[in-house]
Image 1 (cartoon, rainbow, N blue to C red):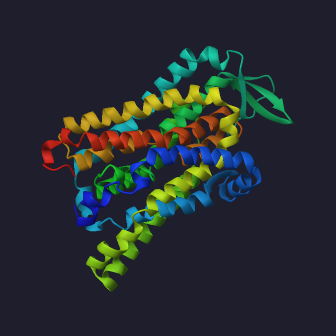
Image 2 (tube, one colour):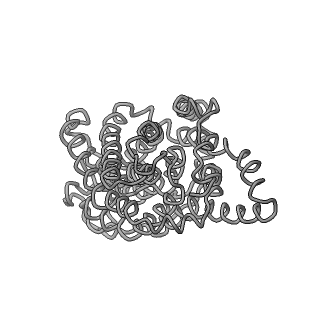
Image 3 (cartoon, one colour):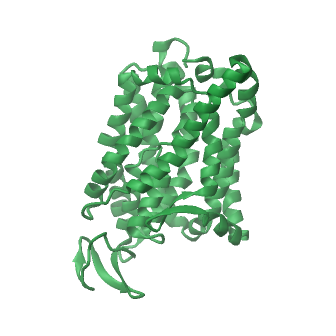
Length: 399
């Protein structure tokens, strides 16, 4: 790896913000919920600043700005010559593709079905129902049965009334088939992984998601053919990944050409060091100011949904990490390979659930719970990675 991409000294959590990041994350989650409660007008105004596709909010402009400043410091540190080398490393790329597309969607379905449809079924309520949008292209008369739902009339519109637990299951499925293509760069960076390889895997997973998201979604949801949200996917990937990547690449070349590599590493990167963490914390405040009312209004529901999502995340991480060790990968390759499988692209999942089932559906709520647990759980997994670098002795000195 290049000096800046692989130097672990740049990644030591030396500041108070980095050393106690989990504490700050919890405080920001609480602060965001409180902001949404005491100043709902501000939260609604910020939440309303978005780019929509087919009537569904796909890109939140405030979140996109925060994510740009979260991603840019990582992107600008990447030596793109090393990215080409990383792309030639077959085993880590194969591993992440196998975990994300051959294993993860089906374990998510099985785990969510067991917890929501069996173990927590009595708590959710056997009689509890959810009214969701009619599937695209379907026009059935009121009273008709479609799958596990019944067509009903709500405020003059035909809706499909389904068991509530099935609506939650649909949201979990949409999370399970959307591997992370943005924030995983943060998790890979914090765990001292190979940034070039992480970027390659993000690119490959983004392209694979365009091909398989609709196929797997339609199969697992069992609601007929799920239309691929091409525009939503392309726009999301473009804003959250391509824009900071392009800016990082161009500014890196320009700064090194103008000031030299020593100035770039010792002065410019030093200034950027805290920006990723600060942007992450601001993102959390914004996210939970938008969704705080939903979370406070459904505390037990949040728990029922969070349990299978937590188990799925830890299971997929553990499987990916164990297989990385079995294949004798370097630690710097093993950490991001496991991370990208464990994390979810919750922005796409939320947008898709809104388009397919409606903003107030149980499916949309389940994807919001994905946001709730994503950061604390992934930070826990980062710590596990950092504490187990000695398991990967094949490369000599960690990363």
